[in-house]
Length: 428
Image 1: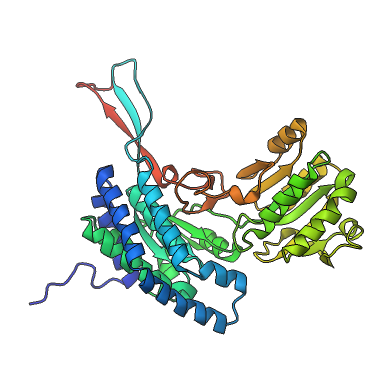
Image 2 (image 1 turned 180 degrees about the horizontal axis):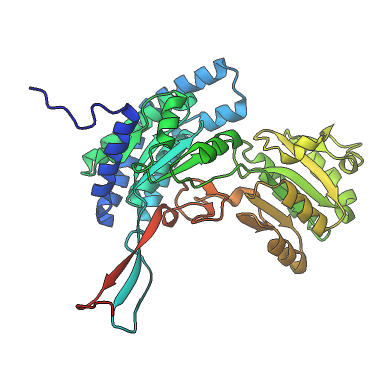
């Protein structure tokens, strides 16, 4: 006689959420050593089974190109043996990080003798909804395992083969290490209905984190009944101040824009102080041209483009709010630092802004006035990244102000609880 599971009458997504909730309860009390051993096993398995992963990814890439997907998005989708090795190295880095679970955030003995401690605990079940970035599959799984959370992964259909292969490898390694394999699951189904079910799984899923374009993020924020940590698009700015070192400014600009254009921390707008525009812009435009970048220029930038190698088009209002994710950048000349800040406040997505200046006064004013998750002084916007910040990896870059802001590492995947220890205390 076949024994039915209590979940058999439920939809596949709800069944997965129930399994994740049970796995989260088993995972939460585990010591660091057990979780670290599982992560090392995951990293080893990724390297041993690289050929399997790359072959699955190749099918996604071929399908994307057949569908006319832009090369910048194809680049985000693509996994090579080198990229898989780098992903495995990131997992090992996460294993080496301190375990946030159990950390005492604050504690003291109250006047009545009660011992009060606030300690970090896992969130529980974390749902991730993301687009064509299969590396997110591994980053999210590693960070959630380390922080004692189960994770439900809902990638885009364009990366389905890649994500299926990655989750299969991860689950085999996690289960082989003695942890519940259901702590890492791919949400069943490729339709939008499976996404809607995940967004409605309140009580089973503790938090949702969307990663992708503005449309995806706003859909999740507006339609989900599960609490959402809002990540944001990256309309990032580089402001070249009147007192900038021109050599440094050119290098930072090109790195911010062109080092990798398909990521959220790539610069999308250049702002230049009028006092340095005549000296800076011809060199900057030539450097951007050599990097293959098209400049969407305001009239004052256009005036400095004559005689350069630049590919320049006249900017339209929509350019100032656009996250290109391509070899394009908007550019404007501003009258002052305050005008640059005014522009950023109007158009920024709140992700990352950079100032290039030798003036400490200008740097201090810019960092005080600009309210984004990250403000860089004489550094590329590309450093806004969990790995670059020493977090091992990131589960997303939060542009909200509640609970987590900026690159989200292990502590941001925990909540807290209070432990109250008395000796027969009763409240008078």
